[in-house]
Length: 311
Figure: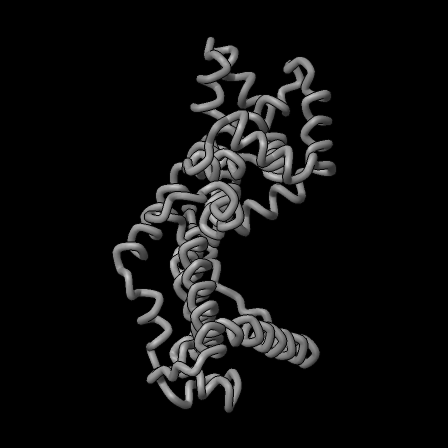
């Protein structure tokens, strides 16, 4: 009589790797270094926030500190004195960032995909032209004449929208992303009878989510921080200017008023802010971006890593 004894199943228990003394020291030093580096990165932002809620006299006496010695919201009151203009500036900037980012992603993704296709004619010449424009520029005067006279876009939001739609570096970054996609994916679409646009939208774009998030963030930051083109081309439009240009004008008006008061015998009951106004401007300008970044950080880091390695 034979008995079939079943061997007990092997159970994998989690194993803990023991670290020796040198590994523990290295890990501790690494944590301390990363913690100090993070603190160094966070402290300037915290000092900006603290200084924005400080009075101008306290900044002049004690300098920039981690906590305001005399709390004051006068700088924010000056910036928000015209809430309609501030809200309009936010709306204009958000609309420019959303529309410009969407159109820019559409153009850059299609350009990167086309330049990566080996059967695309003249792709080397076009790529050379893109590299050439990144190294050499005609200058400000021809660019101004192009926008104002040729395209007739003075006092138009298109004068801000168009120049920031594309950049050679973003095209190269997208091209590297497309290069990382296996060639078999597009070939399978051709075998199934799909056209170029169908292959691009159905097969290529879903694989480019990290690239779209990374490049989209760069485009959105470009539109959000834009003030230079606004100062050049939005000359007669007084309402609903982009946020950065609106804040820039407020700072200049306050500085001009300070100089006028300093050259006269007029005495103000409240000192006009200078440094605290700049800090409050930085908080209002960067606050929304700082709040948005944690939601796209995962795609942003992955996108930069893949785009830089797969060159």
